[in-house]
Each structure stands twice: as structure tokens, then as C-alpha cells.
Image: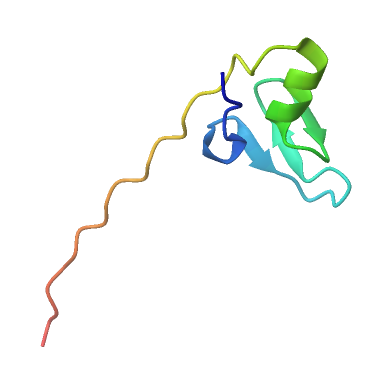
Length: 66
């Protein structure tokens, strides 16, 4: 099974800490490596909390007002 892409997960967030720029809200940790890699290295299994981040609604394009 492929490792999930953290950047498209609803639990992934970037932190302000230069030493630990990646965070996972589902597992509650920050790390230097991507959370999916840390989870797989420590548990031997792919991340079980991966949930795709919802896509923002498409912006309605308004006609120009001239």
C-alpha cells in the first residue's frame, strides 16, 4: 500500500517551528519528517487516520461590470 500524501490530509498542518515543520492533528505530534513516514516507521503500518482534505468550492466567475 502506498504512503498517503500528508499535504492532502485534513489532519496535516505546518508549524512555525523550523526544527519540526510538519504536524499531525490526528496523532498529536510535530516532526522534521512527514507524519505519514513517522507513523509507518514507528508502527510498521501506513497511517490509519488519513482523510482527504475537502476541496474548497469553486469560485463563481462574475461578468465584468463595464
